[in-house]
Image (cartoon, rainbow, N blue to C red):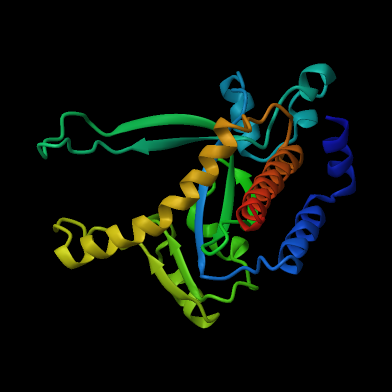
Length: 253
């Protein structure tokens, strides 16, 4: 905890991540092959607030402003984390029948937005927001300019006219999932193209799954600055394990 707190106070997590990324490049693991962008929810302890307190939090007030006469309570309140709703779409079974309904699951905490280089599978760019932030708005904040490949893969949350225009202007090639037309079935060609994209994108899900399952990534700290450090350390740790895996593959038997 003390080590992470020192990183918070020094605002050093981005520099620490960049230094290890530079080590990867010097070791021959250049960012190439294009990049896969996605985001995942990182849960935090749920806050129990009344309507007035929730309104004050949404208005941007700090914990000290909301609970000025209760410093101990204010110190335990996270006013940066937010609620969001995660949708789990029902999938057809082997017979093609959809036997479940789409499920809306409320979640509280933060998001880890990341860009993975397709060739090496390393996290090359990342940022942290509250859980309510829109994934697509963070696209330009996580893309790695050093990647030698120009293709960008992402799900439909990242497809917008603004993002497509920005990608083209900055020399990227969009391979972002196409959205289903409103009131119309998706064409077979678009469906096949999305299926091809999904085969590439699936790798980033393994990255996030490893962080949550093996690293037990969960936010128990207060505030987005500490959450950023906790998630940043997890991103570095993932890259370190990936580096060890690559080195083990290349080592002589």
